[in-house]
Image (cartoon, rainbow, N blue to C red; front, side, top):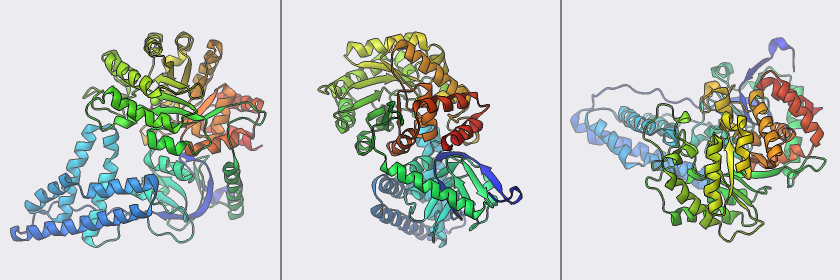
Length: 561
Ligand code: PEP
Ligand code: MG
């Protein structure tokens, strides 16, 4: 790095490793929002509404055209956004505001505010869609004013994108020939930007804060996605050397072939996290040994009535069919908190992350759980010994819960396990594990509950960091208890997607790691470079650190040496 005086390092949460050195590119700003005017004369109101319709249709057509050029989930996101611009309810709300004399621009704001309030009241995943709503509002307003569409500009050469947060439509059409890294002021490790960056394998840092606004467009910046740093004034030679090293690593990752093992042959099963049959089919092309977490609730987020056993079995079978010869770990409904399910959750809770979520729902409604277990058993019929079906419960906190859940599974010939994601379950592992055949540590929630920090809060990303030694100590305790009880311990939170952390987890005694399928090769390639003894040494170093940043940096240095 050049002399410390002219070098500034800004720190966020690195979510995709990799180094990039390129000029800063800012997303085109959102339009200034209009205020109420109410001055459109009655006779002009139909034409004013037509003006809105023309603009909305233009925006929808543009999104549709981009969706046709895109592929896979990018195409779906764009199509869904175009669908929102065409939404009849939203357009009706605009017409109502126009017919009371508001301009098309302001009517667009009024209609959007109404829908944002509705989505926010619904909470969870619906609330996350408010970003899309505001995105279409801004695009339509810019179109009405004849301004350039907000969002990503065309990029010449290579660029690092800086944004407050990226809208799904922006991330869906990232031009990966030119975009070499993403940096957002907001967002967290599970935000939309992070998920897309992981899919595209683009170095990405989130939650850097507003200080990055000081970086003028076109200034050269060095981004290190593993450390979560943005460096201004970096020495160009050193920066380019770091980029070359990162490219070498990318080449190693591309060549890596499973199964997962350390350099001395210690096996670590690498598995995929999936949300539905489509994701499972995509994951089956990756170097994974099966599914380590099928989040069943993701299939029912917009389902209002509980699906019957047959219907559920059909949904689950799509995932099983993608892995006919491999292990699938299926999780029973983890409804609640950020994933409310209309037919499972209470309407209102003061504090849903600490509320009736996950297995807790079944205490007052055992039929909901047993019908799901029946459906899982039915879907798993005929799967041979090569394709074990393991079933785990989310949010287990006590030994009674583990025993009760295991009993219901065993009655149906299913192999029971539990997520370890509540600190109480770690502390009681010696009592919980004897009832079970396996456990899987959910580091996302285990970190949230250990650090008492909302996993969705961008301002707490430094706390909701699985490198927190407090969390790693709980992982160690869980692995020790697993070895004592003679059952395997996996990790299926986002921690399993971080190659350096994967070595730490292996050193702590974790037997399998489950992550987004796109992250698995990076983890496998890193594990292949270290032996088990080294994994244990770096795990000790991480446990001995004072905090998450020190743990991460110590381990990274040790891995480089
Ligand atoms: C976790 O909490 O780490 C986990 C894997 O479950 P989810 O992210 O679905 O809560
Ligand atoms: Mg969880």
